[in-house]
Amino acid sequence: MNITQLKTRFEAEKNPEIAEGQKAYMRDKFEFLGIKTPLRRELQKPFFKNKDGEEKEVRKSVVKALWDEPYREYQYVAQEYFFRQKAHFQRDELDLIDHMVSQKSWWDTVDFIASKIASHYFIKFPDERDTAVEKWIAGENIWLIRTALLFQLHYKEDTDTHLLSKVIKSQIGSDEFFINKAIGWILRNYSRVNPDWVIAFAEQTNLHPLSRREGLRLLK
Image (cartoon, rainbow, N blue to C red; front, top):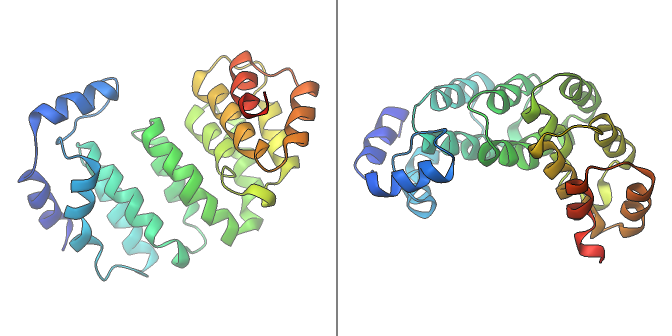
């Protein structure tokens, strides 16, 4: 199944009433077809078939084409398609991750990209990690900064606390909700593995109240 066929299948299942609710939930930032996640995943199965291990340039073309589509469901397909091919990631695909995070940005895609796609990319190519993170936190794009915070979300014992500390401290003083919420989220997740480190870090760091509250929630 190609993208044109996928669109035909999705269009046949669109539901304007559901779409209005989805659009409102996303603060009217995106248009929706009104296809709920379970149905969307069922409809997209033929599109994913026989696509594992596609060439890097094909992956890039598919993801960008879906990212350009006006309805939000296509961005969800794109990121799930890309994630399914994590075992075949190659160098120089970081620019595609950057594109996905930076374009049509909101938490619903960025959190998936950060914690699943960027996460696995850096596991496969650890030598690219620090340079990318430095670039992200040095810029003003809050979604790239959020990605720098959240890509270690599920690393557990493999979390690089030196890097995590550096990224968090680079954002001290920020009033941006999505950054401070992400700081709290990553600290809370890591507190399941290393509560002593999180407590000590919180005591020594002037965290935003939101970050502190979220980060220490499981420790009270």
